[in-house]
Image 1 (cartoon, rainbow, N blue to C red):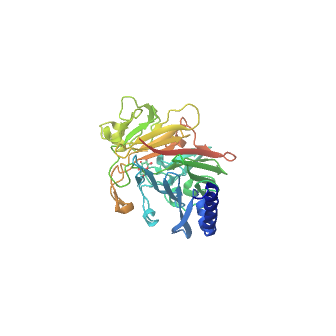
Image 2 (image 1 turned 90 degrees about the vertical axis):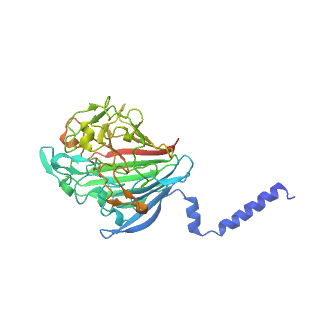
Image 3 (image 1 turned 180 degrees about the vertical axis):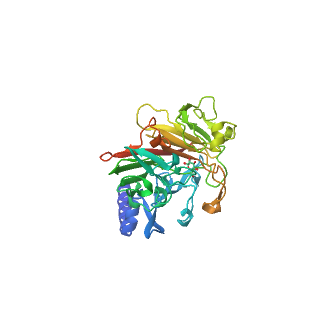
Length: 383
Ligand code: BGC
């Protein structure tokens, strides 16, 4: 038998030999295996669109591209370790152009609705293009955050990617050159950390959100009515027939809007409650219960068959719970899956809809010299 020391020396020698045989690229990839991997995904507006893949120590894999800041897939394990893609989306860039439901996109300059496409700021009236009956939804029509090519770079030394976009003064009717950066970072704790940062050279409203549609059983497998949802919100902002907040902050207690204890999304969704009739299901901003301005749990969704859990935390005042009521089977997504009504739900952390027209709501105005910063975390686990 070889003495133990000799064995160690031999093993070290053989390992050294093996390493010398590796190409520099292989060495880099093994050393930095938890950095974003970039691949080209096509072109738009004559610019390169790149798809970034983030993976972590538990095999979680997230893909996002610089067209619309879109998250194209999120693969997470179920309670048996089986991976599935839990967001609706497409396999190709073409699938996203156009992308009427805003699958996976960053929405803005003003996420959700601005009533009658108009607001007043510092004594001046601004008019925006309308794309939702009388309203402006998710920032307008042409150059909204979800349908432009952003600058892109992998984060150095972090498992993430940064997308930056300059929204020019007057673009879609909004004032000021707004410089916006969003970063997606995947942690080994199975958290996707989303940071937004912005500055402007003229006062402007800003409200940004992530519009991923989740189905924790796996995208395209069915509707989301069996998911159990908890919303950390004692109040919500009721809407009028155009889905514009009336200004009231209404207690959820005693209504089908009460998700303060985990409840199946489908349990009351078709109740004859005026707000559900108006929204054709859930399509409402919930006022997050919070003490102070820091990160707070906004929502927890649980899918009983797979055991997958999604927790959403944020520093924002609201979360739009949208139960995918307007998905109607006209979009065919990954693997030929047809996205029918309520096949995905969104938990859009945000400021309240139409805040620029509601002086009582928390302010969404960013002024020159200030830095806008907001953070949302999607945490995946099982039970
Ligand atoms: C809105 C829905 C809208 C959807 C667009 C959501 O944020 O609340 O009313 O239909 O975005 O797909």
